[in-house]
Amino acid sequence: MIPLFKVPMSAQAPDAVAKVVASGQVGQGAKVKQFEDELSARIGNPYVATVSSATAGLHLALHLVKGSEPGGEVLSTAMTMEATNWAIVANGLHIRWVDVDPATVNVDLDDLARKITPRTRAIMIVHFAGYPVDLTRLDEILDKAESTYGHRPVVIEDCAHAWGATYRGAPLGSHGNIAVFSFQAVKHLTCGDGGLLVLPNEELHRRAKLLRWFGIDREGDRLRNPPDVAEWGFKFHMTDINASIGLANLTYAEDVLARHRANAAYYDSQLAAVPGLRLTERDPDRECSFWIYPMKVENRNAFVKRLDEAGVMVSQVHMRNDVHSCMREYRSILPGVDQVDKQLICIPVGWWVSDESREKIVDTIKAGW
Image 1 (cartoon, rainbow, N blue to C red):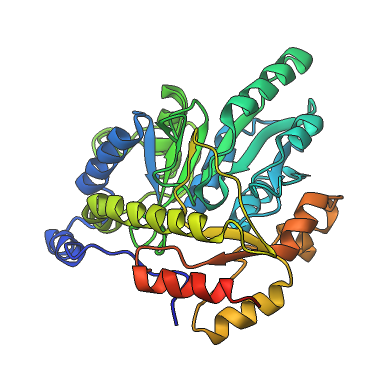
Image 2 (cartoon, helix red, strand yellow):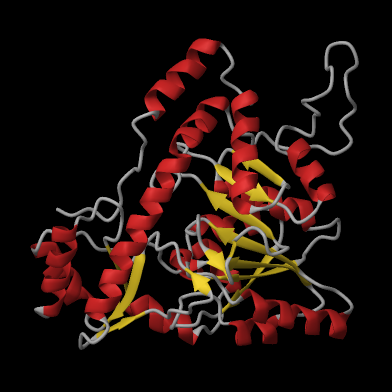
C-alpha cells in the first residue's frame, strides 16, 4: 500500500535527542532558543515563539487578540482540521462560517467580505494543502472594513499545511498577520509534535513568550527576585527534546518539501485532462507546499474503491467541521462547502512517493473508476 502520510525524520535526529536527554536540560532551554533563531531567519520575521503544538498556537493567538468583551465573533472555514475551530470556542468566541471557493478549498473571499461586521473580532484563514490565500485581496477587504466600521479584524493564518509556502515570493508568516505553523509528526518539518506562533509586532511577541509559560518571565531570577505575573497564561511551551528534533530536521525538510512539489508537478501535468476529475487552482504568485494533493472527483466512492484495490491510500483528510453536533448553533448555508465535501479526495504526494509509485497512481486514475 502506498501510504498517504509518513513521518519525515532525519538520520541525525536520534543522536540529537540523546544528547539533550543526557544533558539534563530537557525542558525549554538553549535548544528552543536556537530553533527559534533558525526559524526566524527562514521566515524573515524576528517575532517567533515556539509552542507545544499548532493547536496551542491557535489558542494562544486568539487569547492574545480577543479583548475583554465577551461574545466576539470569528470568521472561519468549516473545511479544516477541527483544531482550527475548537480554538475559537475554547476562547469563548463565536464562529461565523465563511464558505469556501471550490477552486482552491480556501475561504471564499467574496463571502468573507460580506460577513465582516462590527462584531468580527478576528478572521481565521487556512492555507489549505499549503496553497496560500490571496493575501493582497484579503488586505483590500480589511481596508474597506476598517473604513466602514472603524475597526480592522485581526487575521490569524493557520499555516499547519504550509511550511515553506510563499505568497509573491515571501514566506508565509512575513505578511503582517499572526501565523501559526504545525510541526506535528507527518508535517514537512516535524519536531515529533510542536508548533510555531509568528507575530506581527514586538508587543504581541513579548506577551506570547510570557503567556506560553503561565505568564511567568523565564528570563528573570525567580529565586532571588520572583517576578510578578501581570497576566496569567498557559503551559504551551516547547521542550528542548522537541526542538532538537526540529533542528535536526530543518535542512532535511527542504528536501522533503522539494519532493512534495516535484510529485505535485508530475500530477499536474498528467491529470489535468482526466474526465471526471478537477485539479485545484494554480497561481504563480502563490507557491504551494503541497502537504497534501487535493482534487475533486465525480463518484468519489468508486474512485476510493479503485485506488484501494490498486494499493493506493487516499482520503478526504479533513471533514467539514460544521456537521458536528457541538457546532449545531453555528450552522449556516455553505454551497461551496457542500460541493467540495462531496468530491474532495487527496492522493499520496509526499517524499516517500517514488517515480515508479507516482506513475502507478496516475495510470490507475487514468484507467477510470
